[in-house]
Length: 466
Image (cartoon, rainbow, N blue to C red; front, top):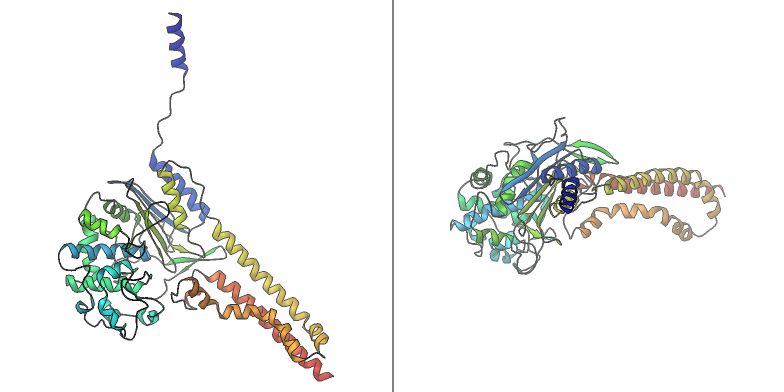
């Protein structure tokens, strides 16, 4: 009896195990912290698991002053590519498109100066292995296209960088041509087919591929820590298969459930597997690519909006993060990684801070450049007097250090093109999310130029006086 009473006391005194926390609460708490630590103006996200949406929510505000919620429409940029791939695959399974047949014969007005374009197939377009490249296509000439048919016809003077099917090159033209193929095969405008064959069956009632149907508020650019609302940079957005989708976190939840093979299925399991399988020459699949953690992902970056999505076939999880702010660093992927870590039982650190720190450094560069310019101009006369009797080439050589920032600034867009694997970069583009870097380099170049001009002016004046 003594031992029985002792055991009973121990049982009654033992702490009751806490109920397992609601996963939705864990995700929401993390997202609330992430919204603060990243400093993004508006952030929306969704988490799914197998056939259900675990959480869809939003934080912050849009540029019209409205709170960002799970139903706030946002541009998702290149995340759109997975939707275009799905539209193509529905037509493949309907027998109206063949993945491995050349598309040129089916696209009226599509011709190129390079005869190899006649070998491009739908699979090449979706795998980004067609040979189309920003290095050989005049993408600037495509920006003001009025339709997908007009877009395709503007490629007539362009060429390919590689034989079709031999090399992966990320190029938006691939997916805009794929969208045009959808139009021709379906007999419907791309936006209409996507709405009827993809959005509507999934219940994505707040999704479109045109500002005319669903207009998001202007996004933001970060300028040394201040978020400045700006209209999205002009370009071919309506009907674009490469980056035109406008949607919400709630709608993306339905999409991710379907992409994981649950809920409403738009294509067969084999069709889904085909879209998720890398090509024979690169890991990029069809609007999806594996990351180091085994997730299938795709990010999207416009000039005022960023987004990223991921599915984890092994666990059935899906994640999407959207923001209406674009800065020198994209925080959407780190936020998504945190959501994935929570799904795996981890406790991620709060994301963000990198953009703020980098922009602080750039701000200091601006201040230091301006200060050095003032000092350099004040000391220009002394500099000239010390070199008045030297050879001109020696004096010119002394100007090289202050003129170096000018050379760096002049080469700035071309340097970014090299880093971006040849993707076209214009000065106008560099005034958007890269504005702090552009301003810092511009002020440094202007400061160097002012000092150089002051030195040369004083050198001439001193030499004339002698």
